[in-house]
Image 1 (cartoon, protein in one colour):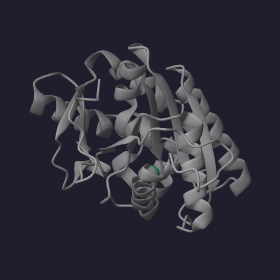
Image 2 (cartoon, protein in one colour):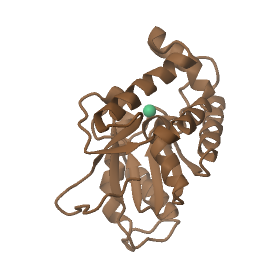
Image 3 (tube, protein in one colour):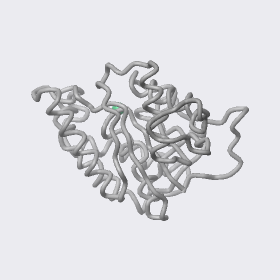
Image 4 (cartoon, helix red, strand yellow):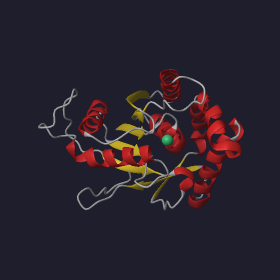
Amino acid sequence: MNILAIGAHPDDVEEYCGGTLAKYAKQGHKVFTATATNGNIGSATLPMDEIARIRKEEARRAAAHIGAEYICLDYNDEMFFEDREARIAFIDLVRYCQADIILTHSPKDYNPDHELTSKIVTDIAVMIPIAKIPTKNKPVDKIPIIVYFEPVNGIGFIPTEYVDITEEFETKKAMLYEHKSQITWMKDNYGDVLSDKDNYMSSIEIINKYRGLQCGVEYAEAFRMAYDAYRVVPRRVLP
Ligand SMILES: [Zn+2]
């Protein structure tokens, strides 16, 4: 299968589904990672184009750990809005990746970029095969299955699916550590809770251990299927 993980910001997909992507890759599936924005507000000191360039490189390096290709749609961080161009850009991305499965943010999350990314991905799934919606890449004859990963700190999220990432947790950490610019940003922006590299990682470790506790393994990532009346998924598609 072709797996596409779409986050709002560089580091989102590594945080919320990095272990699952590593597992898909290990099983021989083709994995793409993508972000709607380039993360260009993610520094208190660097100019916007410079931090955007750094963060895209960090995301590319993170993807390389699992042999994945990274694509950035280059919208402005926190100034990402829905319009015709954005919808077309997302359709074109999914067609380029010929995605069978898309992992993305939950409809309800703490950040508007996260929620909008989730909304657009969910909205465009049915448009991927439609020839009357032309994009640079040709229509693909499949409607991708949408899977939501959990919102920040898992707040208000009841999973329907778990993926055991015990064997992939070290790879996930290595992917996250590529986002070096964000360690400083977390400290500047969010204060003591995430005041250094180890605390940043331990907050992620707590979530993955908690999800592991729920499903009887050491580390897990949690998901919900975007079921609806028209697109029932009759089989397990997560690794
Ligand atoms: Zn984010």
